[in-house]
Image (tube, rainbow, N blue to C red; front, side, top):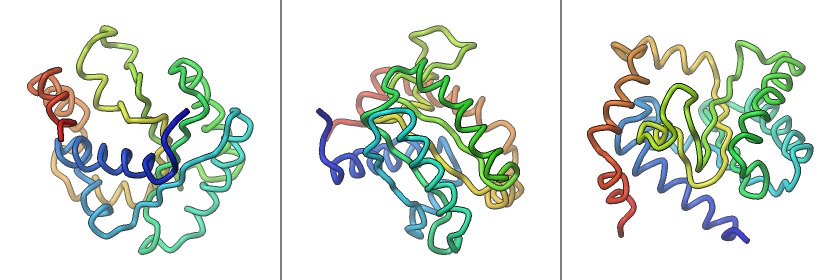
Length: 181
């Protein structure tokens, strides 16, 4: 049994502020957070099929929303796809939904999971934590906004490698220290 809706949102917001923004893993996140333009949707789905329905609704909602109101969405789904390999496989379904809704080039989805692992890193490597979140999460992003942000940041292409180096410098002990009250 997972925490209640509000606790899930609070855990996700804490992860966003402590790790994603606090470690500057995503230099674009702070502005939308400060402007309160992030939609947090906690899915009640308990099956991949139900999650797909929520995903489609959230993709449409983001597509149709005023970017000043909702710039990006975090679709948190604590009761489904808790196994990372199942979650990773579901990303093909995500891509198909984007294609079917004719949103390719409009919205893209980034993936975060408590057990996230990059295929080119050793299983216990600290760099996996760049994409580890408290709950399985799909991050829906407007591509036009992402392109603007990338254009505004020098060396944006190096973000992934910089994040890996940040995590290596931080280490397991530093990561654990982020979460101490």
